Image 1: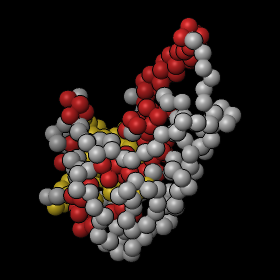
Image 2 (image 1 turned 180 degrees about the vertical axis):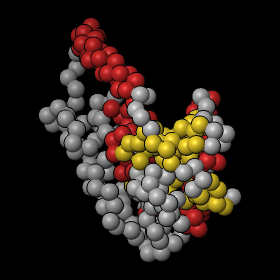
Image 3 (image 1 turned 120 degrees about the vertical axis):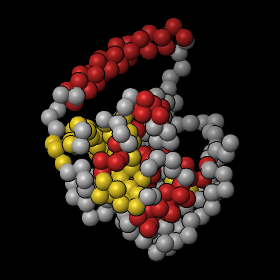
Length: 271
């Protein structure tokens, strides 16, 4: 398995203090009280989310996928519920110039089998034109269905960068929930794992102990200094952090045979 190159340090700044196991367990148990409270509050919020009202929409509105135009209702694949990720799109950009945040969200859903087992279907919607989207999906090796919603009004189309949930009742379709920004994070399990590590995500907004600096400022579409923080890591094929026509979000390089994408339009995409 190919992994992203990295370097280890023998003198990390701001290391946690060293204690014996008993002292560590005491500190760990104290934090566990807060973690349990956080879990219970999360459960309460999810319960409130399940009690939100819903909005009916036209399930016959057409979206464009691998089989051409289909009614939005088809995305349910005969199931009662549907979760979609609404992926941003930059017209004419090379594959590696698409949104880093959306790229990492889509990358983390390789298989929806556990959603399907609960009667939930999954799809990715994007505002890009299908003739650009199709080669991108093929290049990335995505296994989930993608659809272009170009020209389609919200909530199926409209603003991208959201997770949205829909419910079907026969041929009637309803929007039940939508979130964006950090609300998208549940899809990205890597963020939760990074939150468990001593150096975290490396983002500038994080509250870190003195001497433990962020590894990079989140500046989407700009060169990183050293390492780019978290979901905006970009590198060339040699793992060197960079921005340009041969760079792309790091996970794309982990695929066998990954090579720089051909430019659809301009050579670089800055926004």
